[in-house]
Image 1: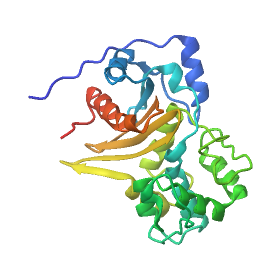
Image 2 (image 1 turned 180 degrees about the vertical axis):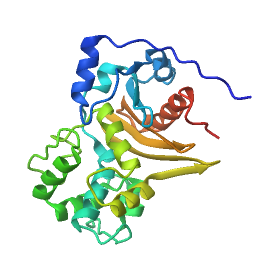
Image 3 (image 1 turned 30 degrees about the vertical axis):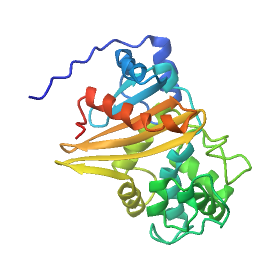
Image 4 (image 1 turned 30 degrees about the horizontal axis):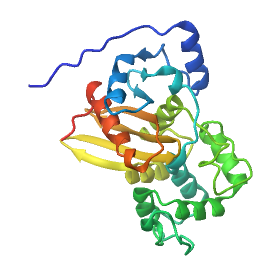
Length: 271
């Protein structure tokens, strides 16, 4: 028997609502976010501190766990590989998602990165040196143009083309993530339909019983991410989880907590 999910809905104080909407005003949400601070218990259960945003695209309804943190921008880390893959395709920095990109031949902190691979392979293992090679091909000028075009986060590149999404100045909030992903999921970004189709395909994690789960993790200590969306019954539900993360052993918590939150919000059934 399917358990009915009951949501405790509380109006957001005006000042906090203005803060969140100002940070994520591209485009503005139709109504004040729904606060579900009762779901903080899921973070606490896993000894974690974080925020979660869930966006029902059809209803234009945003739900937040820890709204203050959800409005705060952080470096996107490897979640930027979503936008980066799109930019690489649109600029011709790669021929397609199957072109093999050299990693550079240097020792890496993750052994799986010590191999030339395509974006299709690299996004799965979050291969930083492969995407840094792509970044050198794109260049700072074209990144500046495309971050504006996609209205991605703070849209700042600084002067280090290999690290601006890892060390800053590029940052994005949890609420901005769900809006960006909503446009990608529906093919409405200011980019070609074919490139958006390709990136969506790269992000598909599960396809079960008519429900599709798309996602990408990110980690740049002290912050970890898991972002993506669920397609269910013809509707799109985007999500973004941001949490304190300093130890590799805690990295799996991002997906564990994220799936638990999606389950409680009634859009995902695990297993």
